[in-house]
Length: 168
Image (cartoon, rainbow, N blue to C red; front, side, top):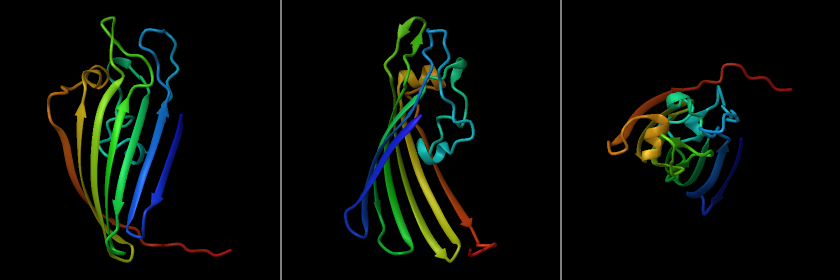
């Protein structure tokens, strides 16, 4: 597993991001299992907001690994509000076969939109919308139907008071 990510602040309000994450995978025909599994990783934070990867198991014992190439843009119009838009392109790290037919490594693309509003000290309201465009390879390794629309929206309120403070 490795990751390379970078960001550039264009001005105080705008920032661009780019990165790539790699998790090794097991070739479905090699007989050797070399896949990396983050077990208790923060997949939502790193591999798209829809949690398609590593939040649930791959289909039929597959673990083809993951290449996640991402670009993003964030805008902060005020100290209390920020918006972000991220694009992920997912591919397998290992070769995938379905009935002895080699599959394309591309799994699909995801677009994530999120807005955060700091209502008051220690209280933040967040909302987001994500959509995923899967491929035939995604159907092989995760199930589902790539022609069906995949999306979700969410709203959360986060209350994070500082309870213990110590200075050394």
